[in-house]
Length: 366
Image (cartoon, rainbow, N blue to C red; front, side):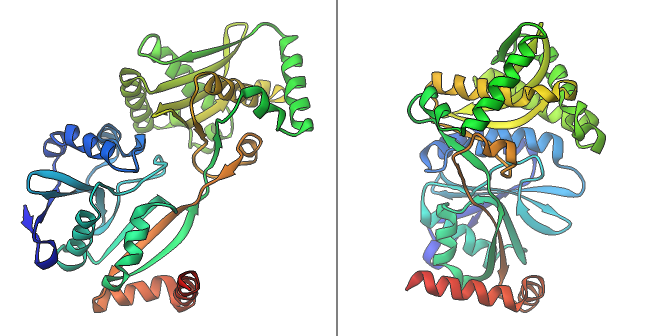
C-alpha cells in the first residue's frame, strides 16, 4: 500500500497482481461499481474473474490498481501489462471498459500515481465511451501527461421505448416485407418456435448447439469461431454458467421442427440487453434465420420492459436494420512527460494528428 503525496495525501494505491488477492475484492468491487455512475456488466468483478482465468498467462500479467481513502475502496483500474506496456484488461472478446470510481479525487490520485511513481511510461485504455467521466477528468488534468484519443468502435443500440408494434412499424416497408416473406417461406418447411435458455437447466447442450451453429458460417471457415478454440469455448462456457446463476443469461434459439437453426447469446443486466454472439445455419440463409431470431429477441425485450438493446462492436449492416443510433467508444493513449515517453508519443501519433487534436480542443473550449 503506497500513501499519497501532497494534494492526494488521504489516498493510498495498491497494485494487486495475484489471483487470490484479486478474488477477495469481489464484494467491495461490485459495491463500488453500483455506487458509480457507470454500472455495466462488463465492469463487474465476475467478468474480470472469468477473463483472468482464461486470458492471462506468461505474456500478460495482471495489474489491478485499487485506490482507498482510509479503508474505503473508492477507485479500481483493471489493467494488465503486455510485454512491459500497461493497458486496460481487454482483448478481442471485450466490449466495454472504463475505470471504476465514485470519487473524482480518488481517480485523479491514481493518474498522479501512474505518472509520478509507477514504473509505467505509457498507458492505453480502450473501449471507453466518448461520454465517460474518465475522459472529462483526463481533459482536466492534461498538463500532467501527453495523451491522444481516437474513435475505436461505434456500437449500435436501440432504446426500447414505446411498444414493439410502434417500433417495428418504423422499420422500412421493404425491410418489413422481406422479413415477413422470409418467415412465411420458412414456415412452409415446418413449425417455427422460439426458445430462450435463462438458467443452468439444459445449458451444456444449448451451448454446444450454439457454438456449433456459429461455426457453420464464415467464422468457422476463417477459424475465428468459438468452437475452433478450446480457450474460447472454456471462456464463453464459464461466462454462460455465471450468467445463468446470476439471472443474466439470455441464450435464444430459432427452431424449425425442433431443430435449432439460429442462436443469439446475450446478457441482460440492469434492464439492458447486450448481444455477445449471434449465429445461424447457412443451409437456411435464404430465409434469414438470424434476422428472424433478432426480431423475436427484440420483441421479447419490449415485452420484458427492458430499456435498451446494445448490439455491441461495430455497426454491421444487419444490425443497422434494427438499431436507431450508434455510440462512440474511444481508445486513449497516455504518456509520461519524460524524455523517452515523449519521444515515443510523438513518433507513434505524429505531429499532424496531435496538432489537429489540439485545435479541436481549442475550438470546443471557445
